[in-house]
Length: 457
Ligand SMILES: Cc1cc2nc3c(=O)[nH]c(=O)nc-3n(C[C@H](O)[C@H](O)[C@H](O)COP(=O)(O)OP(=O)(O)OC[C@H]3O[C@@H](n4cnc5c(N)ncnc54)[C@H](O)[C@@H]3O)c2cc1C
Image (cartoon, rainbow, N blue to C red; front, top):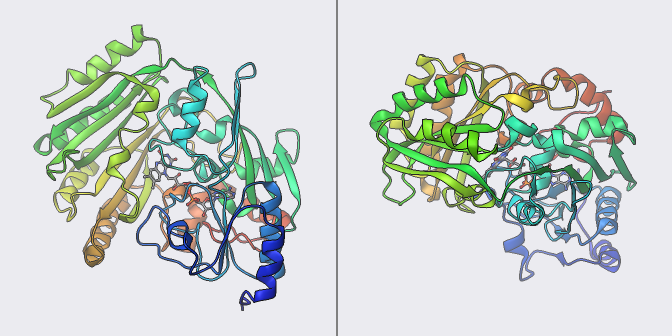
């Protein structure tokens, strides 16, 4: 049974924390407690807006000593909405936006409130980048802790493959450094184990030289060409250079008309000599409805999908990995999209190859390294009254695809209603090792508002 926050407890907290503390009724409380997914409408007993590591330590110690539930917020993008809780303490890291780029070592050290738009802006000043999220407002912290897919993953691996160190506050209030040489077991677990081990207060990444521009962008086709586009996508992705990543999507026209489309979003980070012919091959396919493939600033490419994901829209997602994009799968995708009840919803295929697939599944907590695809069913709508029909569409679409999917699932795309079996599958073959690590670093499971790893008994 969780205790209620009394006046004395709050006064003790307020006396130590440097950042703002918000209680129900405070001016910013209702804005700060809301996350990306409009379905999530939770009311913490207190929101601690950390401005430094010491705030995070005090917030954790306060929550633990008062037996209050802990939710940790980075960018607030996770659709499961576990960055916020009813009652309990929301430890909000979103004010911690420090970014330090070391151009000589080609590294970036960032605080956990940074999003990918802010990250790219600073690293690109030095002509450097690393794999990061495709929507600029997604938080660096949550995305990294779950794995991290992005346009550069064929060349440089997932975001976790570029994490070189992290700092973490444990449930006991200790501040630990984690890297290959310090607390290496924890470092292994942080790269895919999500927020299960504590509050991450700093992340250091390996960066890579990247021109200000890449070749890529979006190309869209009328929906009656959907099967042909997805077959072309399958052929293209069968043999891609590491530098080229392509996402396919059944989506709606960005002009707000609701016109259904089949689209591809590409990024080639290699030299223009090799990039341009590869992108021209895509441009030459079929009769596009629109073609915005070409030379594009890398930072801009990482915003082209932003408008399709408005904050506070209602979201319900289902996903799983799939090894083969068979004709049958393509037919199901097209048929299910035809039945889509919302002009905001999408079906997305992300493709994995190259560097992302050249790590062994036990090298770090994230276990899914097989070449193939992720199928992401995104139900998104604007009116609360439409929730039932949109959730039903996502579930039925998932049910239709499930026989073709592999067991694995990406923890960062999981919702709030996943079964224990699915959560276990998110950690794959590393689940048992993660439960032992959880028992070591968070034996009482204080950090359980996540895709939870139970501590081994
Ligand atoms: C529009 C949109 C686009 C997306 N695009 C991509 C993409 O391109 N690639 C990709 O891989 N994923 C993508 N995602 C999924 C994304 O990786 C997850 O939603 C991720 O959890 C977001 O991290 P966050 O910090 O923004 O979220 P939050 O909701 O703030 O955090 C999610 C969880 O991470 C943990 N966490 C966050 N910060 C900390 C911290 N400092 N310390 C400890 N634990 C913490 C907590 O458990 C928290 O509940 C996208 C999501 C959305 C909504």
